Length: 337
Image (cartoon, rainbow, N blue to C red; front, side, top):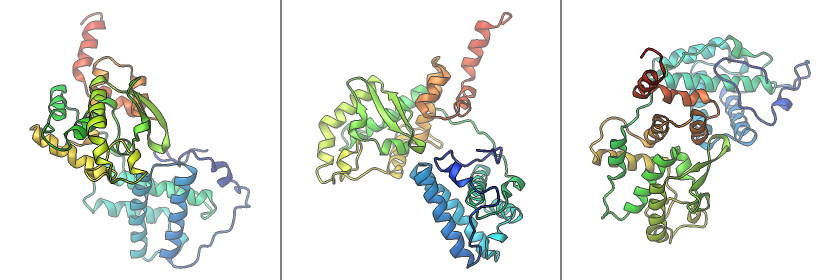
């Protein structure tokens, strides 16, 4: 598929070749009339179905695109855009400029602009637009902030924070251990099934973004925490759970599926109990997992595989975190240290 932007492209999907047919003038006709809201909502629904069914993007990604495109739809309605002809590059640039006045961060604005770019590219591919208007668009370039990484002793304090006398101690301890041991995204942790974990050989199977599968080793501490949780607590929690919920590795007090908000609150609570300040979330433990592996001398490509990054450039951000290791390498290998 041809490159259409230096910063945003449609995901590679099975039907791209089919969608791209018709550039010889035989593109299917488009219904460009009707009310702005009706046309826009219809196209957004079809686009999100395309991303879900054809591209296999994760539910959370689909929800993010829906939120961003809803903002665009509200902007178009407010500014009297009644058909597809009004969805011009200038209108989109005005929309991006309007986002800047809503106290949004630069990364949020860039993400929203990228979602709109991909939507316009989709409309061109399916014949709703006769020209690729994304070539005329530009979007703010988000700054690359270094992830926050906790010192190992702070991670240890966080993992030890659950109260042993708490009813959910074994579950919460296992969650914290597994987040740090495997670098899981919180959505990946919440959708883990019992059958995905093989504690005998020390590996788990994880479905990440776009349903890409990866196999991650589990450390001995995490294995012990999981065994304690499964053997002593989990059977009690799933007594009232339905068939699907009984397959989940981690469940709530009433046997229901854990969601991202549950785990986020859990980590925040234990971070506070451990005396840790600042913004700490489940993703912080993912950052710690990657950074601490690299500090210990792990191969960058291996860390990339365990994190599930498609591009090693995404993983390379962690090489900028540990300045101490850079100094060690410099003094060890430079001929005149």
